[in-house]
Length: 159
Image (cartoon, rainbow, N blue to C red):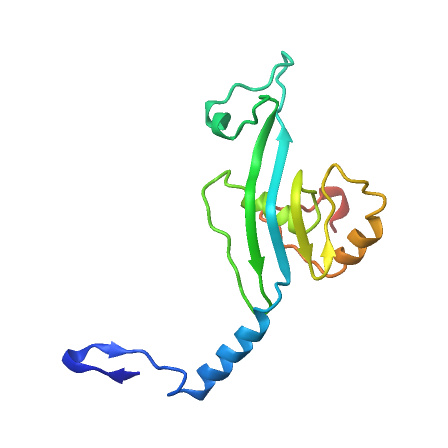
């Protein structure tokens, strides 16, 4: 870093540091085609029913309820691209849809609608014929690893 007048600092430019220039070139080449692309992604879940067989009456869910009142919108029109060489974090408040989006990307659940392309594979939507997409999902799952936020070990399967 070079010093400017009055003790202020200026950051290095690519011309001053060949490593930064090389890094910028690598980043630019990875940006041409996203590794993962999500466009107009939606995920709805059916509302839970209580013992009275009525959906739960939760005012916190009202803004995310669908117009028919029978579903909760967990992911609403999500559009994201992830490029090779990037490290990305998802931040948001509780219930924002972060875990749902990651579950969709890892093929644990399917989106209600929208388009998800991962490494050249297109994920099916929940309403599509999943039997036709079975081979694609299995091949894609061989490339994906997930570290869940909750302990998923089953007592009867652990040593």
